[in-house]
Structures are given as structure tokens and as C-alpha cells.
Image (cartoon, rainbow over all chains, first blue to last red):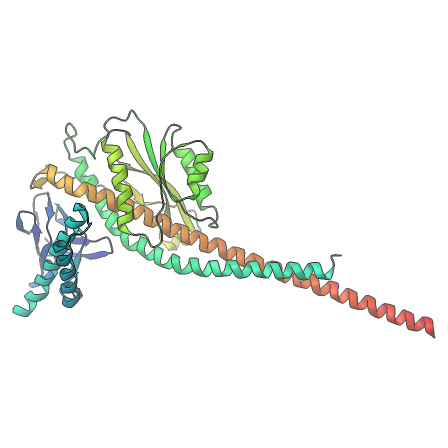
Length: 137
Length: 303
């Protein structure tokens, strides 16, 4: 029985298809999901999501959000989901450099803004990991 | 019969008006495209979020729920966030919103306005306005977040039992439906439409795309790490994005309504200019005929 994976971000429905298995970046580490998984809700941290479909493994970089698993359906709700092809390494690195600069010189940014900068660095790192994985293989 | 100069002046003023409304129509049309795209792309996210959260809510132990999931205090008082437009000239958009508000909301509710137009109307009706916000174009998530923080705090402080949002659901360019939905405590929200175009114009009723809440047959959810942590992460995110989507819907509706209103204004002005030109030509021809008549009479008299 296949697993229905659905990934939505505020910009679009990124992915909706039947897959064989999914690995998500849970808050307490990676979690592999197979069909007939018990209903589960977990928050996710920026990282990579892997899914297999017909023996083919695919990677997506995810941002923050949470995942709901119920009766053979996985709903991933996150603020970022980018496939390897969509990630532009240079842009991401530039964004990360900017974010680091902000952290080193906080200026008049509030604590909340700094937290979101921190999160954006994690997201950038997740994207770079997905991008570079392909090369190291 | 009106005199020539008067008609000429009127034609000129009508043509000027039509130029202005046409320019506004073009501006609205380009803004409309962007606002509609933004609203339509955000919709799957908001709908999925709403569906998931409501499914979770069904299984939550209601004896000790997360504070955002249940009413606490406030003595039945409601806070209504009214999302409307800053500028007028958008047809019946704000009037329809106000009508829906007066029909759906109780007498003693407090109001927060997003947009200037209805702030004035509500003040005139002697309603209690708590705050006024204004979100410029294009809508930024940050600006919406400020407002949703504000209302969440009011709700958590126990000042209100319910927080409702009144916004205009965007169906298509010609159709926008004023809607009042409950944002807090979290409940099922209808967004956009699920009408297919095949049945349009017949007796097919408009129905909002309500998030489907399917009950689970088996035992409750496992929460990782804990229900409290998952909810304290997911619920604020839900409120921020749900509210953001509502503002997007309202903005798409506003620009669509303005585009349509300006288009019909331009069409009317053009039609009027055409009628007046016809009238002008008639009067001019009558004057020429009159003159000729006088000349020939004068000649006849001289013979």
C-alpha cells in the first residue's frame, strides 16, 4: 500500500503524490515513515526530506514546520521546500553570509528578529546539504 | 434644445472622466493579477493547515486543552477583525462587508479594522474600535504577523471569548463573497471556492472550500516530542498563516472589485460621450439648416 505524501508551503503545493517511504527531519532526529504508520504529529527542524518512489530516492530541503501522519497520508506543512534543482548555491551562500553578518553585528534588531535570522541560517544550511549531496555521490 | 457650447463642454468632461477611470482600471488590473496569484497560491497551504489542525483538535483532551484551542473567559465578548480596503472606488465591496458584519456579529462586539474605509463607517455606527491597522500593497507576511500577534495576545489575556475575522472571500474576478469566520478559538474556516466553472450560471450555489475534517477511527495521535510542544509550535504558525491568507483573499477581492467597477465606469463614460456627440451633431446640423433657411429667405426677399 503506498503512502500519500503531501508537501505544502505558503507559496504553493510543492508535492502531492504516492510514495513508498519518507524520511523526515524530526525535531528529535530523522524519522522514517512507511505505510500504515500510527497517527503521529511532530514538529520538524530545517533539514532534508527523503522519499523513495519506485526505487528512486529524491531529496528536498525543508524549513520549519510540522508533519501530520494519519492513515497512509503524510502532510508536511513547512515554510520552505526546495528540490535539488531549485536551489541556487550562490544565492543561498550569499543569504547565509548576510545572515551571519547580522548575527555578528546585531545593531538594533530585536531578539525575535535575531531568532528568525538564526532559523534562516539553518534553512540555508539544509539547502546546501541537499545541493551538495548530489555532487559527493 | 441645449446649446452647442454646453454640449461640447460636457463631452470634454465626460471624456476626461473616462480617461481617469481607464487609467485606474489598468492599474487595478495589474495589481489584481498579482493579488489573485498570491491568494490562489497561498490557498492550499492554509486549507491543509486548517484541515490538519482541526483533525488534531478533535482528538485533544478538552479537559486540559492548549489555550488557543478553547474559549476561556471574556464573558462571551467578541473581537471582530474587519479586513477591508484603504481606498474606495471598488464597487459594493465595503458596503457588502458592512452588511454581512451587521447581520452576523452581535451588538456589543469590539472591532479591529485593517483598512481605512470601514473604520470610518464603524465609527459612525458608534461601534467600539480597539485598533486600526493598514496594510500597504503588496502584502507582507511580517505586517500581517504583527496584527495576528496583537489579536492572539488579546485572546490569551482572556479579554475576549472569540476572535472573528471578517474578510471578503475571493471566488473569481466577478464574484467576491463577504465572510465572517472564527479564527480563535481555532475552528474550521472556509476559504475561496470549490465551484467548478462547468455549472456556472445555473442553479449551482456558491460553496466555500471548507477544509474537510475526516474523523480517525483508531486511537489518538502520538505527539513528538509532547502535545504541548507540538501545539505551541504549530498553533501560532496556524494563526499567522491563516490570517495572512484571509488578508490575501481580501486584497485579491478588492483589486478585482475595483477593476470591474472601473471598467464599467469607463464603459459608461464612453457610451455617454457617444450619445452626447450624437446630440451635438444633431444640434449643429439644426443650426446649419436654420442658417441656410435664413439666407435663402433673405435672397427671396431681395428678388
